Length: 430
Image (cartoon, rainbow, N blue to C red; front, side, top):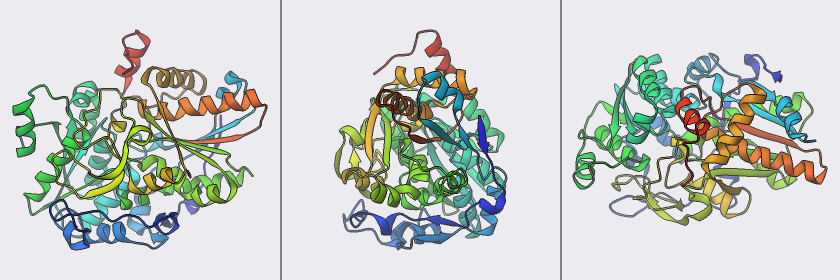
């Protein structure tokens, strides 16, 4: 493997906001009660002012506070690695690079926004944050970040993942977080769902409803979201901004860029800084999702709630319906019924291509990656790797030298039960 790791001077000083570069104006979020466009003051019960300002901002560049950059330096800049052993195994002329976000303390890309959100909340006097988590990567990242800024953290973890991934819970608790399987009896939303279906496996939509209800009912508490919203995707763009500089150092330009998609944060983090180049130079950008939750490929483009109970603003996005309960696949971070509105606009206009892949082929890809490159990917990351392999084999068939870049969104060391299921033949497709 060839790594490109650079010093702190290559860590971005500004986040990139794609909103002014979208091909059409971003449809406004709508108030869940009045159905009128949401105003900044409507979000004050759950978000600090700084994040609300970022959510509505149309400035292309937003300064990263030095306090946030200082924490970033614990693991950033992250390495750009060429997957030469994978290339040889595939006998492809393509050159494959991945941005390795698994080197962060929680093991994923999620701290890029968790640290920023914890910082802004702490600065405005908030004492506790609530959130949801699927596979546990977001929850562990927020517990890590809140501990650094002396905040408390309550995480509503999708029930099926809570039991599938016990060590994610242990990691969150090690950083001082309180972890509750969702749906729970802690909230009105949870109690109503359990009354109708005591065995409900949970969903991100349900967990979001519980976390928001908890935040709204406590004056010292705010809510924190790990994907979908503009300010979250904005914070993640440090990934792509670093990757651009690293590729320039190698005199390389990507022909294909790939990322997995649940709500859109890790995908946007890598891909958004390249979107203007894609529109000009024809770079193929591919968003990969599970066939078990095919939001971009089979969802309707319309306004929908971001949560099951209808507490959030309505967002214009591709959606499977806010009451959709996806099958319990191991890629818990990709089991969301909607997607980031900015991403949906780019897919709608054909600037980004969406693909759906099923569970077993993704684990085939993840195992091949682990056996060639030595790093065990998260189930979510396996979705990106599946399409990277497909694109590399296509380049082989066509005899073309291509540069393929993908985001390695997180390691799978706490997801070994999923690999055990695959290796023992117990894993199923849905």
